[in-house]
Image (cartoon, rainbow, N blue to C red; front, top):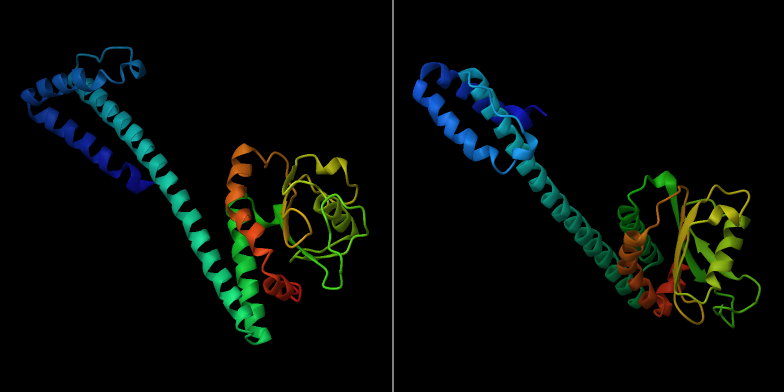
Length: 265
């Protein structure tokens, strides 16, 4: 905070000192006051007092106003750039770990190496989702949805059959969560959003959810259960499209999903 105010306050104090030393400087201040006040006159509808000290004080207030306005615009632009930078960083990190996982699976590397690379890309993907939601980790849980290796016919969207898929998550997987996601998995939509989850369940404090899965037989799905109201909006839905588009393609790499089915977190 000190650094934020240091320079404008220094110039204001310098102006006050110079005013006391020179009548000419006071006249210069008058000119600057008239020029600088025009763009922000709505902030100061009253004219400055004619006393020298008050003129200088008024000049200082105008300078501070410009400083805050320019700083606000600068911080806003830098914030947008930082958000874009963060999104690119999450994307690059995810792509790096995903490519490593696919390469290790294709080359039939050791189980430990495959497990490590898959865990890395799953973690990086969940971090990416967390950056979109802007929530503390306690307010959302991520679940990977994979067809059970023993399932022969596959889980088809809209198909009325018994639940037979794996959920992989760092969170505790309860029967209520599995039943909830079973319903979502059989939805005809590739992306599903629900902001009234609490009306469907009794024993879990889940408020909202987002889910993505491929069309047809289940290959790979991903769900985010949110333990807070008012999180999902149009912007979140739009940002959710980018990372989840990768999942729609990843699911068709059977070697990868088979390896993911062996992960226990």
